[in-house]
Image 1 (cartoon, rainbow, N blue to C red):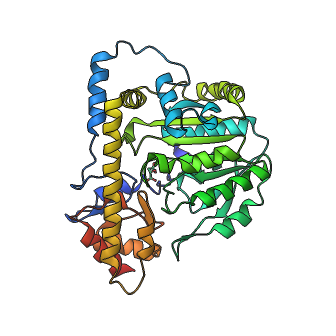
Image 2: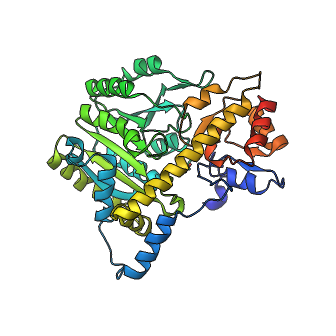
Image 3: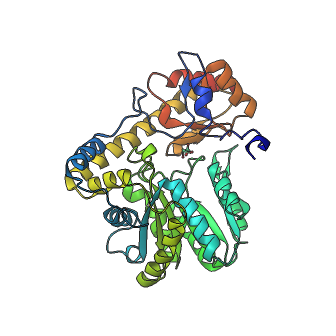
Length: 393
Ligand code: LMR
């Protein structure tokens, strides 16, 4: 069998690491995969994570199996981070630990295919490159809905609402909870309400991908879209990740949350989720979840983590504004739209040929879709990146 296989395709995001590693330039800049770098360009382990790891090293006395739902404290604290404790949505939500946000999406896809009545999933255009791959391989029929106008850097709300008007019971619609990847543009609270009302009328299921909580405005502000949707929708699914906001990337620390019409419906749905996990990876690995549970359960560490998160968020915002400032004199393309956006990413809206020239002539690596990871900019490289973008635009 192996001998008959064709050459494997290269992943549009993960595959960039190889191209970057083989670029010999001392001035090369990696703005590819979504990863936060500090102002020295380092991808550090957060001090709170180090503290939690020390505590776990000393205090964890067993590695016995848990259930397919993973770490129960982690699940409870994640539910509380997504939905305000005491809120109706919180009482209707149940969370399980998953293998990263990607694992949450895959478990959600398998769950919907197993129990749902429809096959269609509506994905925003543009969206994260792995979304069509995950939902394609699990047998969904993919329908793209307009989301963002790359030329003007604005949301296509009217076109989106017209497309979502075609949602039917049994369909699934994927929404980015905040810090849209790759667009960097999110709905306002009023727009979330419009979207929520429309999805509620359609009878479709909303699946919210929330991988960047805390990277736009703050934890409270960034979960507002979720709260607005949960108020309107009897059922909803949230795939969330701690890869970015705890910088736990390789620890694969994610969660899947089901919001039911009431607490017992959510309990029952969660019970049905567990065999989906059991027949896939049985149960998630513990380390990342144990770290997050420890930090969120300790008032001092939690406050410190919120400061670390604010520092990451503010540094990304400052770099975004600095890039826009440096590009302001560029008369070939106006990049001021980037200033109003947030999160790790920005779509430059340049041609594939310009992306290639950025990489080959300027050693600035961004994805083929022209997505740049703003969190990879530093005071040292931002001027070079701005000069490069201006030159190829
Ligand atoms: C990204 O979009 O770069 C990140 O979410 C990392 C990944 O897994 O693709």
